[in-house]
Image (spheres, rainbow, N blue to C red):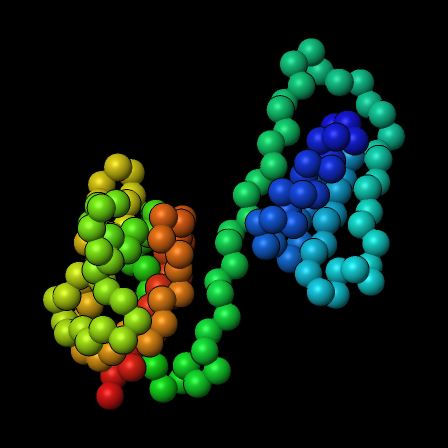
Length: 157
C-alpha cells in the first residue's frame, strides 16, 4: 500500500463518519481515529518486517464503516421512534416527480405509507404501526440505511 492509497483511506474514513478503523495485513497495520478527540491523538502506521510475498498477493480492499445515526431531539423520550425493518435505500417519495409520503407535522395512523426502502431491486412500502404526528425525519432522501436505524420521530399525543 503506497502513500496515496493510505491518504485515500484516511479521507474515506473521515467522510464515512466512523470513529475508528483498523486495517491489518501481513505487511502493515493501520489504525485511523477520527472525531473531536482524535485531533489530540496521532494516527499510527506501522510497517511489519518484509516477508516473501506469494506469487498472487491478495487484494486489500477497505471495509466500509456503518453510517452514523443523526443525533436525536433532546426530549425524544416523549416520542416514538420508527425504525427501518431492513437494509436498503431510503426514499421519501413514490417517484421523483411526486410529493413525499409524509412531511414534518403530518398526522399518521396505522397503515399509512411513510416511505419506501429499496432492497435488492425490490421497493418495499414501510407502513406506520402507530398513530401520531411526524416530529422529525432522521434520514435524507435517497440514502443507504441499516437494519433498525431510526427513520422518523412521532409524537403519539
